Image (cartoon, rainbow, N blue to C red; front, top):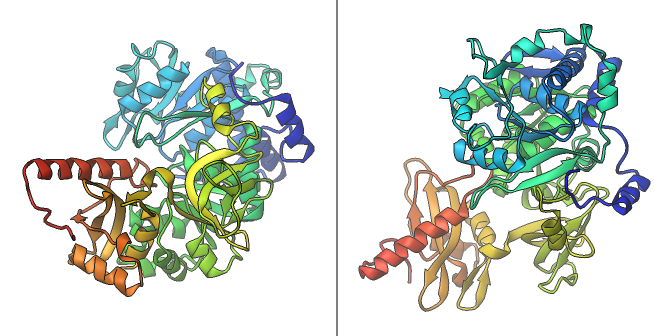
Length: 561
């Protein structure tokens, strides 16, 4: 039995209200396969596959996994790019009660070893080679550190791999169902409240956290988007520009699409031109991308030549995006930009909607999803009135169900009433729209006055010579902390701390919020999937630089006093 915070009382509560049921993910694929067998299920770099084919191959792969000794609750790593094989393995494991552990394709051995060893994975699926990386060699080098691994399965392997690995293509081409009793799949069918997924955080400041989920809790979250925000149906083609191994790429591009009976268009490799061409050629109606991808698509010099007339919704699958960029995306791509808010550890409690007023779509993260509860609270956990800034806390049927092998720690974090402490500072307006104004731990305290870096960044992102910006705390012996802006200037332009100050002064911003140092960079460090800026790395960098300058009595070249 996998440890979680799930209780009979929780199951009864969310089942009674209709948020949870008894269906597992493959049920939805099978249902669409019966009702619309020839509908395209997946489009990827290998072509297209119908729902009937997807359903049949999931069953086939599930039978091969059983034949090779994979059992209920076995954990199985999946490290693949946006390929159909990810879906086949994810839902074949779900058929037999085994637990999928998706791993981002750009993770290296350190992160992969940490997760596979911690989850005691029985097997792992990797590509033979991708972007010139030999994944088979890398995973074999981890076998001594991950002794639980009994099986390495390799996707798209054209060469002989020897006895140590299994070729996924060989399994998919072998009609095992013709010689095996298919009723074994019914006997192994898991309950919708069994753990079926271990998801990971980005690991931007420490080792990745591992979070457990059931079919029911993830379906509740995905259904909120599919039914109430994206309004997904069999007529939709949902393009996953973002990686599907975790986050919004999976939430919208896979889970939401399956609940809607939609087609999934999986982009294998991102470049602005590849993404725009993919949206055009697949006739995508809905797409999900991380902020850096959205910005790069808008910067494509040939953007206007692509026919994106079918695209109605673009989902921002990551950190907040500048209002000016959101407006430009809607205008130039001809669609509505939606922004969802949440976390891997918690859930997705809010999302903007297509019929929200434009300024609400650009400047907020929307209203609470059906079935979710959300509050703004003070440091004592007491609810604050409308318009007050405080910590965002939420709960509901879409919540994750614990840290891997530390459900007690997760329960303690939630507290007696089950409210998830997001660590985000937010404000609810009178219409119920949530605006995120910063992270509690990222607030800059200058001489005892709190400054929200998110607020300052939002203003500076409108500066005509700023392409990207991150405002972080900088140690100061007198005031405690000051603001430092790491800036990526627009190509051919330069930015100074004085020019930033003039811009903010014209906006009527209080002077204590002005950045007092500007560090120019060609790029900002982000998490591997590009969804978030690694602020801690920038804080460490400026703290180290200030310390070295102080010890050398070196003047601040870009500072403002």
